Length: 370
Image (spheres, rainbow, N blue to C red):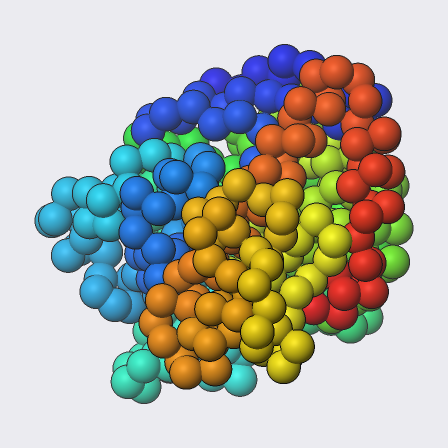
């Protein structure tokens, strides 16, 4: 991996990330392809809306179809016919979401498969082996996502366990991709700082902020990020995991975050919520039944150029498969265009003005609630 910061506007920066399967301009938003696909989208459609890099799910692909099968069929890129970069998570967050079925110890995690009840064991070494077989461009170190809320002593114990697992991940990974460490420590700034120092000592190529968007308020999250992110290594990519309203992206970029992922634009699209330059359009509302206008008159995506709100309303009401695809096309196009606008503004040293102008047109109550 090679990462170069090309332009700065205060803490925000434009960069280029060179990976095995191509280059990525940052700041970048990565759609989630949990099971080896972004639901309802072909690889060509993803390219057309401006996707540079996808996120795949180590945990789910390990269980079905299995990393050995994907490896035998040429790796995840060939398997899903996506020939641009892929980042895979470590499986730590999925284990956290299955904590009622899991038992965590210092060596790893034992849990029952949510699919068939089989007893499974995931360790840092196993996570690295899976991601190596997948052929990921960016591999995430195995970590424990700490419960929220939790006492300081419990959060510190969990953070130190993740740091031990980070070292074991580094020692065991031997693939073609690049390895990122994950900063943990809950909402405790001193624990986050300690975690970052340990990861820097290990020496990762990039650093992610994990363990957020797990129940804390946006104000609590950004209080931590405001104090912590500027102290992250300046010459390495910075990745904020699983955080992704449009407002979150803009605030994160202003703090110096380079990479984002979230299910929000695709999941919301499948449920009839579409992001626009004015706020969120809830296409299921009856007032759109005979609306001849596009979802967003300022949008150049295929959905907005060719189809009316009335047509999308009908597709949603009837449960037609085309509906989620057209709405996902729009939402991802919106997110990628937002990030493209951010990059242009940083280059021109006008990011604050861009953010102000963008937010002034939004109904922020819609963005915050949806």
